[in-house]
Length: 422
Image 1 (tube, rainbow, N blue to C red):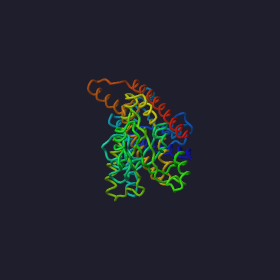
Image 2 (cartoon, one colour):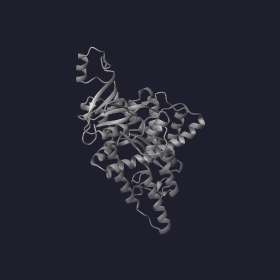
Image 3 (cartoon, one colour):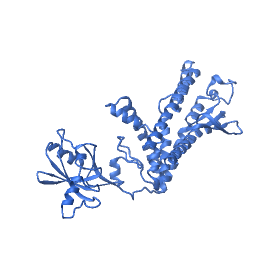
Image 4 (cartoon, one colour):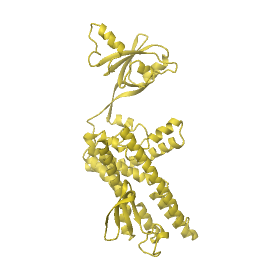
């Protein structure tokens, strides 16, 4: 089944790439620039599909990972006719810029259409953002606080415990997901309603034995099972191991029992967005903006952790999080009951991701090509020479293009390996 979801992910990404490259293709045709080839995937070429009446070759390459529109005159050194009116090189700078930046319009059209469609019918959030610090409001990827405020998540009383392996908490037979309801200290029973209350109590009672009262669905410890066998009275832990149990722990000198604490949160399964057509138009605007901001912040956060981490572990964690676009397999495969809507949401988000990615100041990407065109035009108009020669520009773009392809292959390989191994 996982291979099916990988294929679905590849198809989604390929369609986004096709829409992206179609923007270049359509605008090139609009300004009478010859399109030599429209291919999908990474070379070498696998199959020639057809050649249209304007002599554009449509083809498939062997790895379905990328797409490209090859325009006549992108590399002036290869031009047979230096004065050809069909060459990109001979078009005015403003037309070259529109052709290069046409993907902006196409990526937005795709995202806008999908968001409008989903908000008009119905859609649920796909993820709660607990990683990217932001104040921007997103309906599809809300922050933890926004999810609580909107009742996407429902906060119940008490606190959930998740012990670390070989820790004081784990050795006391506390299990993942146990709900801490009360703490007994010096014969006084205290009700627990937040993680901070637990932290304060443990901090105040280092090296003192404290008793934790848990609501649990886990099996009792061997000691509890022995006590139950010797007892004639019924126990809430009998049979399925459901009910209330107590454990005793002694915090260490660093005031910890080594368990993660989390609010007792439940997902509101009945939550959904459903708006009128006018509200849908409003919310696709705000959601598109939110996704752009979140993508920029995510790239910045990853870059900071990789190149300027506070600890070596932070860099390793960041590198492991570089997963795009096969990461959508997790979303889809874990959301089978609503897989079609999830595919649409991720489809729109990837379209925005691709838009943001192309805005990065990296040669070979569309935005940087636009910068080259603009600088050359301005300097040539002012000083009558070019900022950089076409030959040098093409060499730079080619080297970075090869680098990006290699990086993409590595990311895809790591994604697939992680998913298969899991």
